[in-house]
Structure formats: C-alpha cells, structure tokens
Length: 178
Image (cartoon, rainbow, N blue to C red; front, top):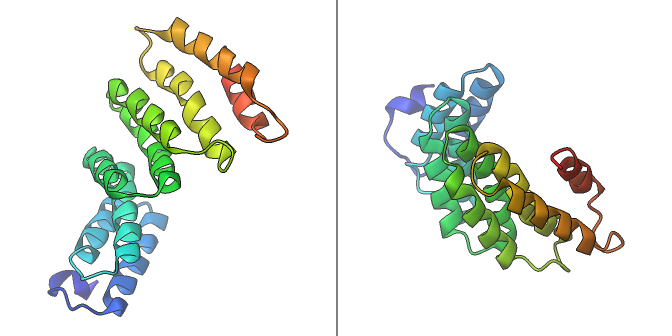
C-alpha cells in the first residue's frame, strides 16, 4: 500500500487502512508483510485502546512470520497492561511461542503471576487456564520438575468446584498429560 511510503499523518483512516491491508496479508499467508504494515501503523498517533490492538496484532503477525521479536512485543504489551484479564490473555498467547523457541524457563513465572492477579470467583476460566498452564510448560521443558508439575496439576484438579468453575475442557486437556 502507498501508505507505507508516507509519514505518520495522524488520521484514523490511515491506521484503519493499514490494519485492513495487514489482515488481507495474513489471510494470504503473508505474515511478514502484515507485520511491516502493522509496524507502520504503530507510527501513527493512536488512542490507547487502538495502540494496544495494533501492537497486539503486530506481535501476533511477527510470531506467525517466525520472528521471535513478536514474543518481546507481546511481553512488553502485557507488562504495560493494568488489566489482569488482558494480561492473562496475552500470557496465553506468549506461552506457546516461548516453549517452541526454547524459552521454557520464562513460562511458569508468567503463568503464576497471571494466576495471582486474577480473582478465581470473577474469572474462573482464565484462572483455571493460568493455574493448569504449568502442565503445558512441562511439555516444553521435559527435564526438571515434570513430576512436581504433574502432582501440582492433580492437586489443583481435585480442588476445582465444577459448579462455579466450568473447566471440563481444561480437565480433559490436563488429563491427556497425566
């Protein structure tokens, strides 16, 4: 798009056009092109909510393009967020990317921090995902602590009240690893 060659104009239409072009690039299996478009969109003066959305899409596009800097972009976005739910959602996106790229040691601290920030009564699904997450982390780091992580998951599963925390899917997923 011609907007790639222009300076930041400050119009919302610029960002919208760049985002639409990025979505089209992603749909056409062009995540590197999408990342370039979204990187250009971040040069625009954006409202905070728009900036968060564009930066998140940029991190996702970088990861899809095989660029590990997408992890750092999403971690930076997570660190800036004050919303525990948004932080947990970003953690859920970051964890597989860390594991695949051999950065398994970074997974468990992120999951534990996100779980500690969530209120299990208000957000039981996200809480269950963050607390059961170390099982997934263990699959990326086969060496140390797998037995302890499995024991922790079993204990967690025994304490879950299914009436207030509908996590049959998490139970099924965890059960495949036990």
